[in-house]
Image (cartoon, rainbow, N blue to C red; front, side):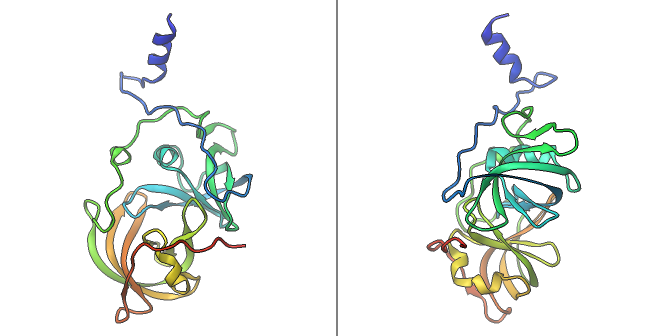
Length: 230
């Protein structure tokens, strides 16, 4: 059997459907503090503003960000309640890391990463990111209030949103969180207006305006990113 034939078979799923390309080794994100590994139980997924899975929270509070290529597989290979071992890069923010691989902590089976079996990409992961301010399909404009459980972060460890007590995730434009850091602190009460989206993995609001209450909403816009935590 020729090498070309072997390669073609390696990229095919049962039934002849094309699988995603093998996942490349993930380079360290800006400001990475070195390689790290952590064991934990998946509490829930985290979402980008357009509803795509972009990571997960573990039961010990660790926030795991997953690059887009890994996230497309993560949502199919992992479920809340699974015990996992995550390998990746530490960010400058304590308790936040970017994953390069996820394995089943009980069996050692590779679930996500270069050693894991390829999986078909969901259609929404093939779509390019939507322009800033353009709501994703199915989103509804809404204003909500809530109490912050914890801030959420991007791949570089910088704050870009928050998880509320009712499970709603807020996501702000890149760099916008710097001017509203106090509103995203644990225990803070806030109001936010934007585009809400319900997905099979949770709910997320792409924030357009935010404030301490619904009468004090201030539009948000991209800005300089906040310095990483010490």
